[in-house]
Length: 124
Image (cartoon, rainbow, N blue to C red; front, side, top):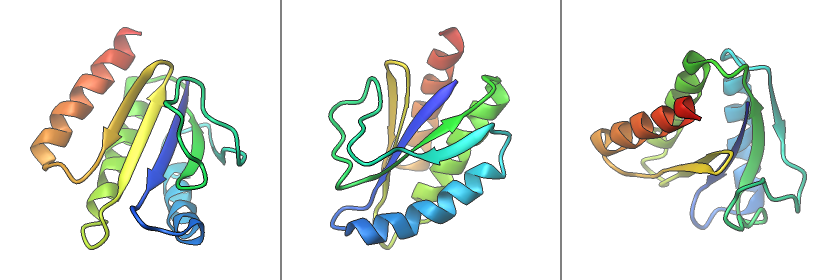
């Protein structure tokens, strides 16, 4: 399973986004994932809604497809968004035709979205 991840921090320059995405990619590599690699500039992930890669940092996370791996990934991305309270952050995850967008919503709202997203991924 491949998960396309894009991160954004409104108003951030590309250098700032790269500064944010490097440590996040390293953090994700510590999870039960097969690979984490940047998406080449100009390439839009399949199923994406016209993501402007000049304004976001994007990478692909390859998973074995286990429910535990997707849950760990979502939790890590949710935590990353939460660490950006001083500068609100956004992360989008796309698996096939399903996209989850996490922003500065309340934790309860995010948890409900995450649960629904994971359920949809499991159902295929």
